[in-house]
Image (tube, helix red, strand yellow):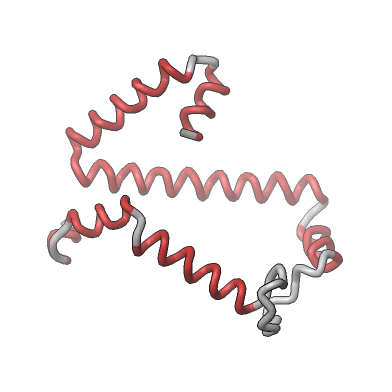
Length: 131
């Protein structure tokens, strides 16, 4: 819903008008294009997100005065201790909290996420996936 809310903010069109239109567009291209359309949409979204991340990084670094200032601020804030092996669960970041957090994040995103499972099950074997 964030995308639809963003479109409402940018365009000024009411949310209750945009929502059915966006749903109809998605249903149409998925019905016509099938799994290939879904994969192409995912690829396009990936490219758009990478461009957005790079633009945000560029604008942020420009605003604070460059990479050196970002690094110095991170150093002052104590955020550059990458391999703190202290097992305390009360630390903000340590090797163990990051390893556990990332493991659960990846399992939840790839192991039990409905959209990922649906894509995995949509193709029965590797040859059909390569088509």
